[in-house]
Image (cartoon, rainbow, N blue to C red):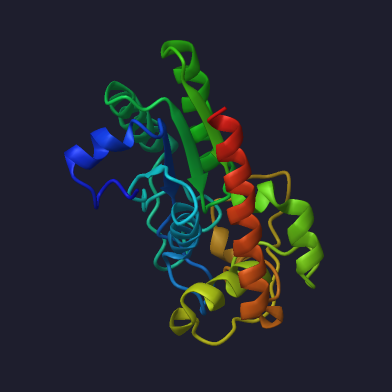
Length: 236
């Protein structure tokens, strides 16, 4: 049940069947020269469309903006601060809790460390504040790490690489504009650098040329099954 598409009467009726809501998080972020800026939002929303066909659960409208650090200087990336993400998420969960929801799954299509940590911090605060609440923070790429390593031909595949390109090929192939060259960032670890573009000009981490629609469909199916398992556990 996508809550932006149902009435208040349907919402009340839905609470008789589930107290769980999934909130998808994405970004407006560069994904190389070949993938759309909304890649991180498109992917989790599509996964949730498949989940909604098999399980009665509330699904929130996506949060389109996230915390982008390594890509913040790239054209098209529009980032927010971790504090903004924390405050927004805190407000949404607190008010949804007042409306009767108790189980919150935060599904992020963006795997950035500061981004995910901001969501986890909210969870740590709210499980102490609100009674009978469950909160899970999930990123498909970490959730399915072992499986993705078997599917991907590219070693150390990540941002805008083989897997993400495969997913968009499976979901919205018309949005894939060719293939950006294979690339890996060259940040001088462990230092935090200001001029990100100097070390990662193309914004790709992996080899998009290895992508295929079939691989994308396999990843979507795995993500759907894993989410259904988590929903089963959450609602016990």
